[in-house]
Image (tube, rainbow, N blue to C red; front, side, top):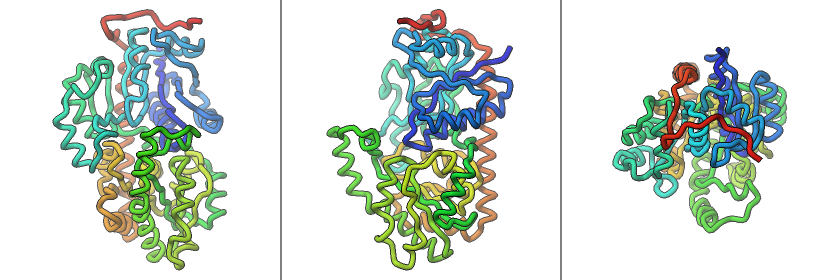
Length: 432
């Protein structure tokens, strides 16, 4: 019997990293479970992303809708997908984004569910720090930092693949009932959907020659979602904007120092590009006239937000990537391009994933200043063959682990009933 896998993913479209999660997971599933029927249940897709899926995964069905608290679906197509699916997979994410969906699925169907490469940071956003500092704190937390509903969902999951070892460490301290709590990389490592035409236009417009340019990706410490969504800022947004203002010159100064060193050493071009939509304006404000005159003409700011396939293709053809955002380096690695991830202390424990897949040489804490970033990039430039061989090895380790994750998902498709709060009900139906 053909197994049917329902993937809950596609959290938002203002971040090409979040866009990349779903096609990455689908690629891993199609590669290692070629006979499975795959259904994507997105949280949010725009027309650009829907076109990408239609082009790259024509065999994958997409169903829209929500689950009500009683487990009923808001659309007939979602009700049918839930009735016909054997397992629900929560895609790679910065947290348990749709934990209530997993709970409602299990209560309504009794069928298994699990998490496919997620982070769970029990400290952020209240406490921040370096990865080592966060790991030290996480060791002493225990179950009481999570609410009972979340613990219930984690306890009854068929699998929890943690995309970073700090999340895995934390979950292991909880003594969960889940039988599989293991490291499992972010599905972005398997993202491979390209856009050759759009990438060629970017390279032509900015004079970028394959293998002879650097991509730089900026970020502020707290993402201004209100700005991207066109909403009035909350009191917390105002506080975070002030905090961003305190650190933006320091953080983007690290990138500027990297750009200056790269251009003077190589004479090559630099593309400053966004991972998130707000960063277009950020880059335009901070890169350009502030750079030294001998460097300025080599630096190009992409003046718009781009698609994930377009970005992936440009990253593929670059000499290297230096990014304060976490997922652009993953996208680069998926294409064999060496990358340096410059982590801010306000980012979550997810950054540990670089150490976990053997890419520790490409992880730098921004609090250490520009020198470690320059050193990491110079190591790539001085021995590109070794850098690319190491990058290929990282990619292969991630892909091998993704293969084993998919195999376990298939095992779960021959499921035993899942009991949450002692209840097993019939598959969800549409209610008016």
